[in-house]
Amino acid sequence: MRVTFLGTGTSVGVPAVGCDCETCLSDDPRDKRLRTSVLIQHRDNTFLIDASTDFRQQALRAGINQLDSILFTHAHADHCFGLDDARPLMFRHGPLACFATEVTWMGLRRIYSYVFEPSPYPGLPRIVPHRIEGDFSLFGLNVQPLTVIHGRLPVTAFRIGDFAYVTDCNEIPEEACNRLLGLDMLVIDALRFKAHPTHMSLDQSLGYIGRLKPRRALLTHISHDIKHQDTSGHLPADVDIAYDGLTVDV
Ligand SMILES: [Zn+2]
Ligand SMILES: [Zn+2]
Ligand SMILES: [Zn+2]
Image 1 (cartoon, protein in one colour):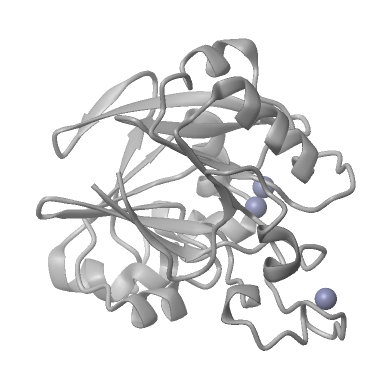
Image 2 (image 1 turned 180 degrees about the horizontal axis):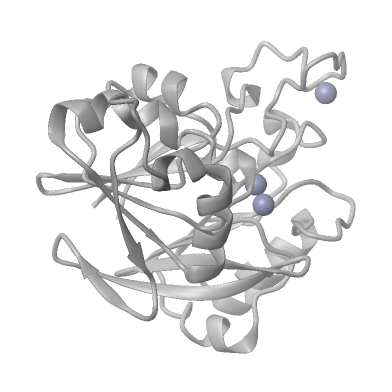
């Protein structure tokens, strides 16, 4: 299975509009972060975890010409506003299977009410909604949805084989921790150095990495507080900051 980071930035992206901090002005391509999402390729199938606000740009950049499914972590704008931009792929290949928990569907139905209501317009997104209620199989992969806490919102993390994707949370409950042991790769939220009410600080992420002991870990959903080059070298071995365009095989 191949994982491509389409975006690794926090909800406003990096550079942030109107900001002239050192990271936002950096020439390092690893400091240019579109909104957080990954593309997963497994044999002949391709799917996303989240359709970010920047999906159109990400899809053109990564040369995505086929998409079989989207798994949604939650319905915050930065994770689902790209669904509409997947329409050309839907027009070409048919409706797209979308997986989300009922809490996330409630948000998606509100944001995308025009998709769910009768309409005279032919150009609307075409999706097949699937409600996540437990482990399921996707293209021969075993997908384990796990609940993590994002302020007060339950967010879905995904363990797929020995890979796990845990974004947008400030707490990983015991039950999810128990199912995140023995990983080859953990991707985990690490917003910034300072504490935040709904995201992990770098120290919190490193704390979970120390506890879960994956073979490798990559940090994502990064704000402009973290400049890649200044921080990357100070992380423990086998932990690094993900960046847009990075591809890893798991
Ligand atoms: Zn987010
Ligand atoms: Zn900045
Ligand atoms: Zn969020």
